[in-house]
Length: 230
Image (tube, rainbow, N blue to C red):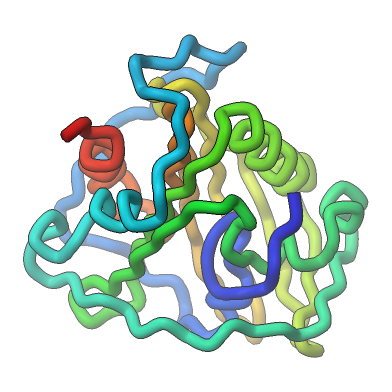
């Protein structure tokens, strides 16, 4: 699966280059212990396998009323198309440098929303995709395995080197398949920590990324809205 350089999705280095130093969220988010990592693919739920349109996905995204006070939509930044080089991670290099700097996944149906919190550097991003369960599974597994398979590597994007560390996390036991990772991006003496969790439920893929506390706080709500039947 090909990923194009932009400012969202799996591996969001390009967006993080513009972020200030990592801040700690102390807003009282509830941190629940993660579920044990899966050893196989849990059975899919009742979710239908028919793909959803982009318009249908858009209506299932969290909005400001779902998130609560203090959240503001983040203005969309122009897509970036800098030359990208990955050093120290052959698996990511094989996928192409774009996979390490993020981008909207090339599934046919998609929707996304980005928010900042409390006027700080804390952010949360939600993305929804729809395709056949097999295509979703194969594409996301390939990228997550590549990223978490390299504990440390470096990405050079537009001439700017970014040191990246990745850690595979126990994924929440939800949907048909789950992936989760913690990424630390360091450049110019500044570091940003991002948690990223993806859940596939039938023909729908949910990806929530951002400040770890905000991802933990809103993941369940995002999944419930995304998979609700009307």
